[in-house]
Amino acid sequence: MEELQWIQEVRSGNKQAYAHIINKYKNQLYGTIVRMTKNPQDAQDLVQEAFIKVYRQLDKYDEKGSFSSWLYRVAMNHCMDEFRKKKYQMQQSEIGENNIINTNHPEVIFLKKEKQRQLERLIATLPNDERLIILLRYVNELSYDEISDLVEVPLSTVRNKLHRAKKKLRDRVRHEGGNFNELSCDR
Image (tube, rainbow, N blue to C red; front, top):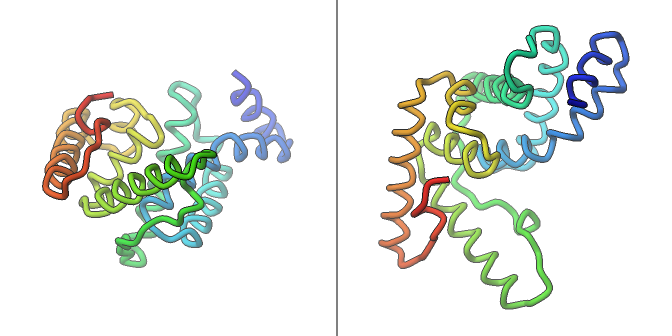
């Protein structure tokens, strides 16, 4: 695995190898954090701080588990610490349209943007802990076990929070008249 090679190079003093790790994970990490904060500038700052923290703690990675799970745990712990320190309230605003996938057909673009806006708005209404688990599962595609390790709660709690969050989202979609097939099936 090339990331283990990069880690070894960084540990041996090659600081440039860390750029490979950043490039591999920065977009996913930013995507999760911007959805948590609803503020692109705050998210950029938190991602940079998280990568600094990961770099400083790289010697603590024991190579037993997945590096990506370890990196996310360090980054999410940093974010949660910052949220607590600043009594940060995750804002209920929408993410900018530049984060939505673009296709060539105007009607498809419009429908995707509308669906994305509605889903972002619905997710933003969830409690912070449920929102984080939804984002880690469906945006970052982490397994239940990885999420459990990352947020340091039992696997059963992850399943319950995910189930409750999806039920809340389904109920709100039905109430608002939307349709999200993604919410009806477990992935």
